[in-house]
Length: 155
Image (cartoon, rainbow, N blue to C red; front, top):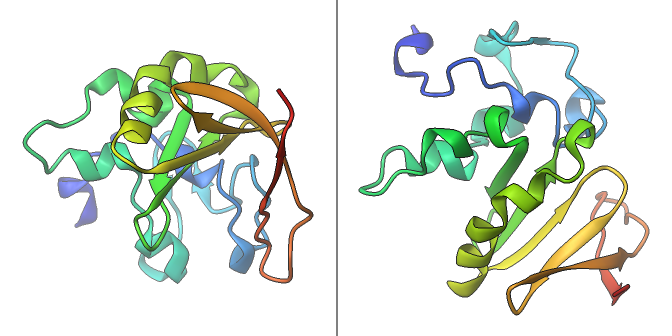
């Protein structure tokens, strides 16, 4: 079964933070199919976005220098993931811990220093890493695909 190779443990934060349009699941709210602390109740039939999803922490567990346990999303309260082209990194802070990104700042700085654009939100505000610091930004309204683009820096 899938639980044997499941390195996520009791972490389900990716079932709460990203929007999953095909399940009508809004950003920052628990999925109806998530048994919190256990896993997905429709795992075998879960939709493509869920199948394809792997956060940076999970991906790193197969690498030579895996990210440490305290950066697992349920512990640091933030999910980080590559965009499909692997150019940019998107972050989702648990709205219940809207300052959680400050505890992950060194990792965000490291990722940005490797040439990735790093963007993240906490349910209320959006940020972009800029020369080692997190700057609040204004985004455009979502387009037909739900994509929001950078409009301007707010600080």
